Length: 372
View (cartoon, rainbow, N blue to C red):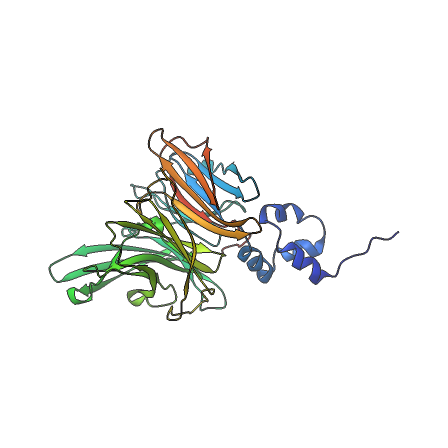
């Protein structure tokens, strides 16, 4: 009997749902399948349906932690073995499109952007001003224009002078500009550390509150499509009200690849509440019509205390087994890394045996996207 061949469009619908690590092995099956790896529409669809993982960096190793949210959740640890990064004092500063950005502030250092799945690496020249850094792209163009943005602030009696540094991948050269915000403009105070920012549609987002505190919290946005002096703005209001930063911790994350989720934990009771945005956040959205819905609430005795300046990162999922909360965080005694999975009445705690020291972390989605 002659094997029946599926229509190519149906094959594509099946393949874009396959995890990218498996897809890499399928490139040699046939010419048509190999061609899909050069199809940007297919690659972007595969990335949008990808499952988040944790990226952990110690002083000498990079690890990717995938979580299988089945009936009995498990984790898989992969040593990414980037030998050319060892011996350097790189710090992990966020991810974008499956790539992660690291920077070495010391003499002779610089930056590196790398896709651990494709083993692609791009070296970034050293810059004088690179604090508050992040990676993104101008999503308003037909072709993504990837950039690295850094900020350095100088405080005075009149206000704050911010020095912006921008490196475009196309030129690998830094452009430096200054912008001064005066006292009457200084209302929003960031409450998230640099590696707590998340990337969506090429832009960076993080949490902030109004000073003096009014109990209102916001998401701030760094828009990579705008002129650098005007790129930082308020995106939307968070559903957290009346809870000061001294009594509650908030952490922002991405939900379903195109939405936000925000976690709020009471520092007194350790109760956690999680909201997600009802609709996807499109490229160019101004945030005026964002609607938040409660995703889950739980209170577990002796659950870790989460701080915005710690390497604790999380994501949430909703599959056939129910709503799941997945957290990666450190413990001090013993010094180790753990993954917590909370679903219904279950709270499973899994130790990452390979990480027994301090680490930096981020949530990322492995991708087949290539950066020019």
